[in-house]
Each structure stands twice: as structure tokens, then as C-alpha cells.
Length: 442
Ligand code: NAD
Image 1 (spheres, rainbow, N blue to C red):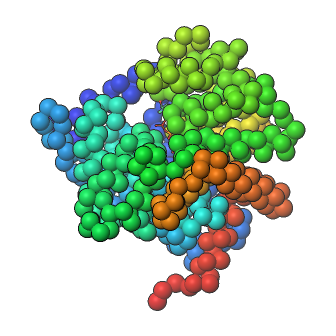
Image 2 (cartoon, protein in one colour):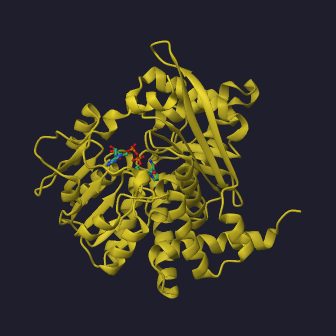
């Protein structure tokens, strides 16, 4: 059976949600990342040579690899790893399992990782990878074989001082542990324990960091708190709508609810629900763990995707996939703030409408950067053979998120830039300074 015909059969379940939008129908993600880059490069007057280097990723790898399924058949999977830049440190970026994964998406996501690390002054570059398939259609054993075979196929294209994967959409701590174990098993016995940091986002038992699982949600909430402080806004009683109830969305919901915020609507690939009195995010997580979706949760009303975007709330958190806020959604949103948990959730046209309508936003490369910050802490702990207490991790995360948020705010104000362009601008200035000092070899 061909790759494509098998894929279409396997992915039917993911399209069951009637008005979900195909990412590809909304434009090429790398073109959109390039538009954002060019806007910021113009704003900071980026050196044309530096611009030419950063415009494209350094390396783009596509691997087609076979895996035996439970029924004995073999299937060819398509995997990607794109390495955008490693000027400031090893390539660093997540691994995504999704049926629409494609090279241009990986290029955009890898590019954003470079700027996310540079923005925080973390000694990492940017990369991203993935496999084009829907993990929900495969057994645990098949997932393990797919992950191990891909890790093996990547070979020396990843490494603890070269390129370090982490979880993203469709992957989790278990997937990272299988990657680590596979990598450890193909190098010499003597080196095994020195390469534990080949991936981050591992489970605690296998060398992960306390606080990594919730790091992205926590980082997002630290940013929202700063915005609330700057705007004299009380989070207690604030109404929140969240699209995506996976790692980022569900932790964000639980953390905001802890501060008294009311989660009035959530949605995921299975559908959208609302309750104006507030959804209990803990019970909703339990429901999701059992059924794989927020749809069907009792004590809530089912609504359409477009009605969800029209819910009146204070803060809207896109925490699902890219380009979910295009023109029609941006016109419908009735909120004060969009806090981008997902990577690239806002189409440039949608962003223009949000800005015209006076809706503020905290851009992805800042808002969801808590994950890479704690990944860096995990990598450091592994490198030093240390284990930091949970409180220590959270304290360091908060310090870094608050200081970066305030630096961006001031830079945006001083240079009359929107928040996204300010994030890019700061990151580009750091990269440019390093290029100017080091020069281009030879
Ligand atoms: P996840 O796989 O844990 O959850 C994804 C969620 O999005 C699920 O609830 C899923 O049902 C929903 N979803 C998928 N397709 C959808 C569609 N068409 N319509 C509505 N909902 C849909 O993934 P995650 O790790 O929470 O990542 C979510 C976003 O955050 C992604 O953009 C990812 O790149 C970004 N991000 C994640 C991390 C991290 O640490 N996990 C860090 C930074 C950024």
C-alpha cells in the first residue's frame, strides 16, 4: 500500500471535527515566518549579510524509513529534521508527530526556535523535526518502534552538543525517553551516561527535570501576570478561552484557574465546549485523559468552532496549532489579550486586524518560551549530573520570563514596535553582534 493511501485511511478520525481548518489551506508557514523576520530585520536595520544567512535554515533533512506494524506489514514513514541556526549554541527544538507535518512547517518552527533561544539569551540555536503521521492511529508498541527507528535513522544528525530534540504536538516524555534510550544504545558503553541530555522533556525517572512538563504553561502564565500587572488587570475572576487542551492548553487552564480565573470555553481536535459559569480544568483533564478530547464533557455545552472564537472573554489562549487566527477569527474575537501558547497561531492578516481592533497580544516566541527555558535547565542538570528541586526550577523560570518580558516591553516602547517585532528585533540584534565579532569563516 502506498504511503499516501495508507495515510488518508489512518487520518480520517482527525478530520471528524467538521469545521477544523487544514493548515495548508491557510498559507505556507515558512513564508509567514519569513514575513515576520523581514519586518523585524527592516525595523532593526539588519546587516544584509546577516540577513542572508538567517533567511534560510542551515540544514534540511528528510528521511523515509520503514517500520513493522502490529499486523506484520511494513509502512514507510516520512521524518524531518530542520536545523536553522547554531551560532549561539547547539540546535534545539521539538519533535512533532502530526499527519500534516511538512518541510516548510518544520523550517518555520526551526526558525522560531532560533529567535526564542536568542531572545532569552539561552546558549542554544534553533531546530525542529517531526514525522508525518497521526500518532492516535497507532498502538503504543508501534509508536515505540516508529520513534526508535527514526532516532536511529537520524544518527549523528542529533547529538547532546549538536541538536537536542524535545516534545511538541503529538509527542511526550515517553517518546523522549525512547529516543534517549535508542541513542544511548548505539554509542559506546563508556559514553552512555554522558549523553542523557540528547533530549529534554524526559520523565523524572529517566533524568528529566522537575517542572518541565508544565513549563510552557507556567511560562505563559508568568507572561500573562506581567501583562496584567502592567495593565492593572485582575486575573481573579477573569474569563479565559483556550483552544487546544494538550500539554500547553491544559496546564495553562489549571494554573490560571488557581489564580481565580474562570475557564469559560475550550476546544480541541474533537470539538468545542463552553460553560459561562466556568469549566473545572482538573475534571476536564481527567475526561480528556480517558477520551482523548474535551468533547463530550458533561457540565458544558457543545458549540461550533466559530462560536468559540466569538466567546466574550478577557484572555484568549490559542494552544493548538498554527494559523488558527486568520481574518475571520480575528474579526470575531472578543477579548483584550491573545496570549499565544501555540507556535505561529496568528496569520499576519489576523494580526493586522487584532492590532487595528486594539487587541493586545503576547507573541509565541516569548509567550511559549517557558518550555525551552526549562529544557535548557534540564540539559544543564544532565550535563552537571545534578538534580534541582522543583521550587528551584520554578524560581529560575519565573526570573527569566519576567526579566525577558520586561526587556521586550521596554524595547517595544522605546522603538515604537509591536510586541512580536520587538521580540524578533532583540533576538536579531544579539545574533548580529555575535556574527560581527566572529565574522564568516574562512
Ligand atoms: P499536544 O499534542 O499536547 O496538544 C495539542 C492540542 O491541540 C490537543 O488538545 C489537540 O486536540 C489540539 N488540536 C490539534 N489539532 C487541532 C485542530 N485542528 N483544532 C483544534 N484543536 C486542535 O501539543 P502541545 O505540546 O500542547 O503543543 C501545542 C502548541 O504549543 C503547538 O503549537 C506547539 O508547537 C506549542 N508549544 C509546545 C511546547 C511544549 O513544551 N509542549 C512548547 C512551546 C510551544
